[in-house]
Image (cartoon, rainbow, N blue to C red; front, side, top):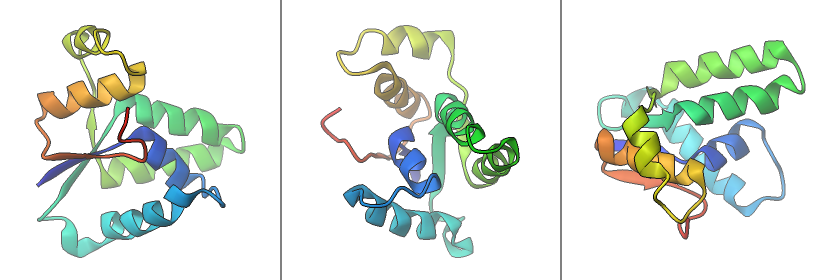
Length: 121
């Protein structure tokens, strides 16, 4: 099974925000992602904009932290690099551009599911 994880959810998980209801579900998801037993069953994907966002936000605290988080992401996820076609198709959606890129990456891979904290997007 191939699953793409929404960048908002990844950001919430990795930056350990408290008081956010989606964080508890996110922590449970993170435990599944980190589990060595799932590696053959589920392939997790994120987008390149997700990686860039995590780097930008975490580097506000420390560039060492940012580098560690990026290494962690790259070791746990396949990265959808995107393409001009994905970007052009994403521009046609009514949703925000990040969500549209995620949908287009999901279609291009193709994934079986997209996990998000905001399904209405």
